[in-house]
Amino acid sequence: MRRAVASRRVFPYLAVMTIGLGVLAGFLVTLLDKKDFPTFGTGVWWAIVTLGTVGYGDVVPHTAWGRVLGSGVIVVGVTFIAFLTATVTSYFVAAEDEESRAASHDEIVGGIAELVEVMAGIEGRLAAIENKLDL
Image (cartoon, rainbow, N blue to C red):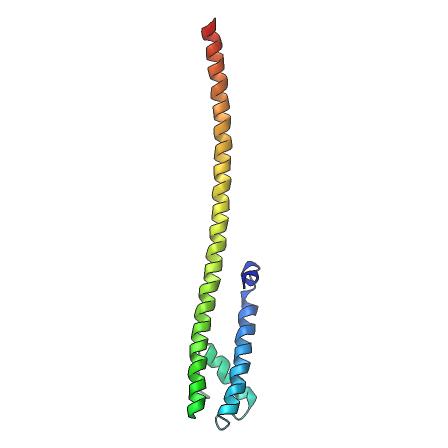
């Protein structure tokens, strides 16, 4: 996941996970509710639509076990999307924070270098004043 966010390739990861869960749920629903899901393709369509929280309603389970599976797919879909959204957001925030810290570090180092130069100039002026006072 970190590599996907770092390389800005989150979409393929999300797509593969959604398709994988959709295929699994579609397979299960065709086993549990053959009347409403006569084909594997219909089951996968329903599962992906449900996982994505779209819920067109064109295909719905009517058996008790089909509804139990449907409830699980809804909960997993909502949880999965919320989890991935939170994870991706936190990685972006962490990357931005790291860049900000690096910039602050560079500013501090630059400020210290500038301060050292000013101090060296003051030291040289003080030495010149001391030399004049010793005369």
